[in-house]
Image 1 (cartoon, each protein chain N blue to C red):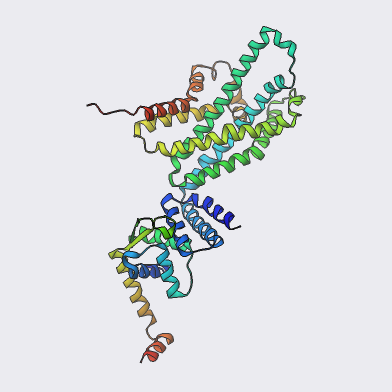
Image 2 (cartoon, rainbow over the protein chains, first blue to last red):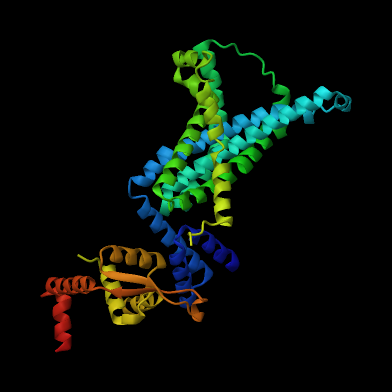
Length: 303
Length: 109
């Protein structure tokens, strides 16, 4: 129990500034506090700190304007990616036929499918990283609590938000466009518990939550960069988020029939602009590579 | 105007002088009032006093009895001394003539 209380106090104290955390644990050690007293004291301090931070309007704006929308959007695109990839994985994994492997066309289509799945997953990782980066860039002293909140929104989005959202989009399509309720052609895929329940969760954790937290820490360190560098990074991040919104399936539908008809008109959203956005999405890879090169070979001053 | 707890902390820190830091101030307050103050109350009040310019803090050296962790050292500023003096004077003025004050004078004489 004692070790558990100290461990918990240590975890909770990570919401404090590193210097303050050291001083607090030093004071607790010097005063000879029990584990329970230490945990209670740290909880009280963290609670007071958070209450003070949340007394201003900025954290609320951050929560309502960035963390909740980005977290929900990520949950929706994560579910779309997981469900889309489930169909292809099911096609190969659950319907494997060795006779097909003798057909050269099978390997070509399989390579194309694997490439598409890889790009979908990579795009999702880059979107998640970018969302984390944006939240981290504007969080500063609230970085840890904002990270926790982003996780909670992702958890909520995965468990309730995304399923309800897709159900609502389907109902809306049925009402607004008189789309007939056809039998689900992918029902066989989602009858399998793994594709219905497990794969979305795995995608959400591995391809969304982990990259988002990774991006969060990079966003915090980006605040030390010169203004022109930050302007470039922010432009790339905003373009990426715009790309994510455009690719989100329900976004155009929920805007209403006139917009949908404009959206569906060929050539408008499938032009060069959107193709450029598709490449901008991968900016985190370029940024991480450039940072690694800079660390490996730092620029030396001319002699 | 200071709060009661802020006054206690400023007084304890002034008494401790160069050796004023979190654990020592808690000990001093506990001795004076017979109650232990929580670490949360202590550090949030320190922040408030610092933001008002009544104290200045810096990180000290780590010591073995603290598990090698540093202290947050506290120094009361001239503004802090003035605020504490004003608070004490106000307490004296407001207490003049009340029963516990007159009793205390009677006990002393």
